Image (cartoon, rainbow, N blue to C red; front, side, top):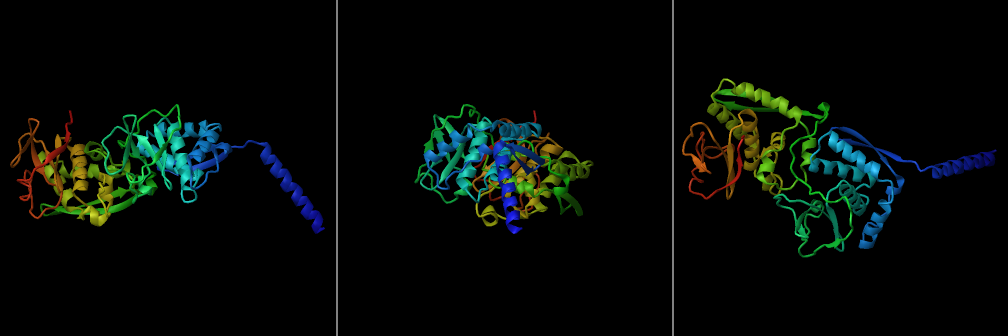
Length: 399
């Protein structure tokens, strides 16, 4: 009886196997992304074996196989999600990273994971490239913005930023120059932008509440701000962008609605200058200070929302938060004033306060958003900086 049962089970297994091979079935993947879940249909022919230590031949073989598969529905689904949710390029790249990690987990085969990222980004229209060293695969993308703290390559008079440098933090790509792999992808023409002008609409239940308080004119103000831990993951590998891009990274919707209306209410009966003074002291005293080297082990600029979330922040972070609050509540002209070891802000009022700073024919008043040894009022700059050279790194004009 046992033999008959085993034979019958074997027949069923063979029939099931033959049936599965007889159908070119799509594989379904569901990916949890910041704004919800995206369902993707994947042609099994796009799931390709790649050696962990790759070569130029292996990379070209990967491309020749995947480009003949039915990959287009996958790319179209990603682009449709991008357009529906108005994802900036950086956020779209996070979606591609998550998709690539689903198709090929990063920890299992880093080369294969990187190839999927490159392929999906290229087929989405971005000019992305690959290069190899003896033990590394380098992934870089065309970008025409002012980006610092990550390597770049010049190819045909175009600048390409390294997208996966964080995975090789101790690598010196000048000592070990990567050799480019020439693969022509017809669609891959667009530059990639690091500007983040819209945050995702996170699920409301994914927010945490943080209690923030500070004292202003003998009155203690309390805030319960909604913050999303996903913001930290979005900007974990975000490079140093120019100050205009950095200062204009917005708050997410729930964070905005839990803070900005309350601040507006608190300053409603104040004069404009007192209201700006209130915001200046909020950014100065409501958060603990710590230098980036001590906090992160390197220079790292936090967006306004990251500053609200982080336990510690420094002068760059306070300047970004102060700028965002003044812009949202008063929308006044401002400049960012960079010293060799410090950055501060100055605001244009109808009449200047204190000793003004003049830039391009306009008069601005210092507003120091970071705690100093002196209790600085509107229009005052630290005595240590009064005779120190500075440069204006960003001018904001509402008009």
